[in-house]
Length: 283
Ligand SMILES: [Fe+2]
Image (cartoon, rainbow, N blue to C red; front, side):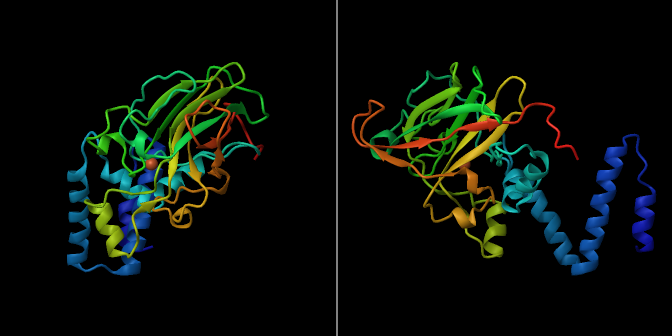
């Protein structure tokens, strides 16, 4: 440890021990970074400017810091350490930057009410919300949101009304939920800000594989934020947000009957198993 680092650490002595721990560790890692890469004055200033620019990109509808965190795998790393659970649980995944309040909808309703419904592949999505032991969870809230067949969320697309491709559903006595929609497309994350600059600088593509987002809450259980990914997507192996987990990849089934649809459609069946509050793994 350098005398300088020792001096900085010795002065960290606030009232909250956890804050002291977090700041001390951050300082240690930042100093180790400087030791390792020996940045020039210009490089250090460029880093500061990058953070300033990132802050300036942030609005109530856009958080460039979260996008940056997603692109560096940091969000997935934090998700990983906070969502351990028993065997059988549905893995969590990152929330991403596009959640907004969804309209409440009846079981089986269409969440696609815009022009994409004429173009997209009709899809029925259904499943159950369960405890990890398989007990159905009635009255659970299932909040879903997705991009269109063009890869755009309602908040990014003037052709979509607010709340399009979003829905809030309540599970029935058997824990079931269902909705009708169109198949989402893979999409690039916004690349007009600092996150995009970083991706270009290190030679990475900005694509996320096609997915639906879920946030599920049920009494007595840990809320679950996760994704469903569509099998066969070319970006499953290189998701720009590092959010793919094999258990979350589902193969849509081609169907022609069973859900009172007007023509051929695809069916996605996805059960969500929540972890009881207070779960301990015995370690
Ligand atoms: Fe998304």
